[in-house]
Image (cartoon, helix red, strand yellow):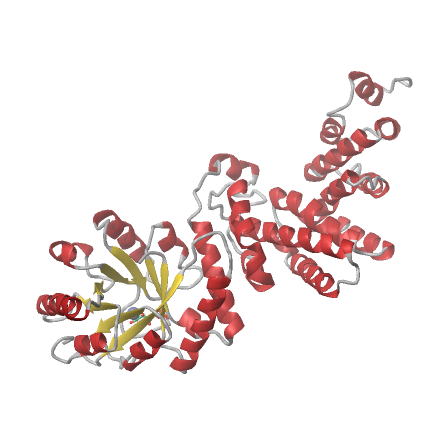
Length: 484
Ligand code: DX5
Ligand code: ZN
């Protein structure tokens, strides 16, 4: 059993309703032909006895109900006397697939022996199997399991004090995961307590095998929210499992993720662009606007890249559909929804790598699909934005227009920002002029020659704009030689 989410029904208001919605979520996600491994959804039963923990927990009868629905039943016995009080017998009777007892109970060794005996008996008699787990409270050391490890199938690391759902994740347990994975390579390592879309990241990176999640999922207001959360967790799984191949030193410098730099509050995970793009290519068709919104507004730079690539992929498909049939109302609505998602979250397109992908591949299409009046209005709204990234998006969006031989508007935009003294704009405008030069060399050389004569052009802009020019053309612009 690897890579599963074990959903605790402890805090579900109506357990059967919640189980039914999980059946639907499981069917939906299994029907996706997504090209990556997705989390298996198991059910986690928190059984309590008011002695080991001051709570009553979940009735074991739900194990039988969940089994009938086709779930793997992961039973977590937070009980002082699992043998004497018949919890193990009942769990087996109801068909538990895994039974986890706590190391901290009085007669741990006898309980483990009983579990082993019952496991053998059930196997010999009914050819049925269940796995055995041992749970450790946050402060119990991993080493205590050394002499038992060959007899147990999983270690359940509590990342909250056992006894109730909705508690805060104890961060130091991440070190325990690393240690447990290191020390007990053949044992399933499971984490339990306080897991949500934020606290799940590190355990995944550390190679956790099974993740218990309770209130983050069971407190969902409706099925859509529940299903979106399960999709988000699966995307995070794909992203966090992606190797860290980025050049962190270079990225930190070029994206200015340094004090006082424009990316100073950003967090880089170290996934390179091709790899995060691959993650987006895996998921973009399946996750929808709400999930993308989550990644778009993430403090992780890599997650925002993922979101932008998901939006781009969807717009690419939808734009072709509306070009083919402008009466295709559904595609028109969808592409407008993606445009709105982008514009509502434009503040997160806050570094040059994001703007330079989003400008030509998202904003350009927003302009293409606007009428002349709206186009100009929107374009100049962005060009006059006091958010310099938004302004850069407008400038670089013109690269798409040049590529498609719409040259007038790009030249108008370059003219509008030509003497701007901010290097981020000078570079972007230089790029657009360079691409315009490739299409209309004479026009652009003439244009730059005249402009440079009126007022000296910014050198950064000129260096990019003249990159593909002949020596003579450069001379003409720089040294005002009239004939070329
Ligand atoms: C706590 C239980 C956990 C808990 C998880 O004693 O063992 O399984 O229900 O719930 P959340 O995910 O809300 O912490
Ligand atoms: Zn539990």
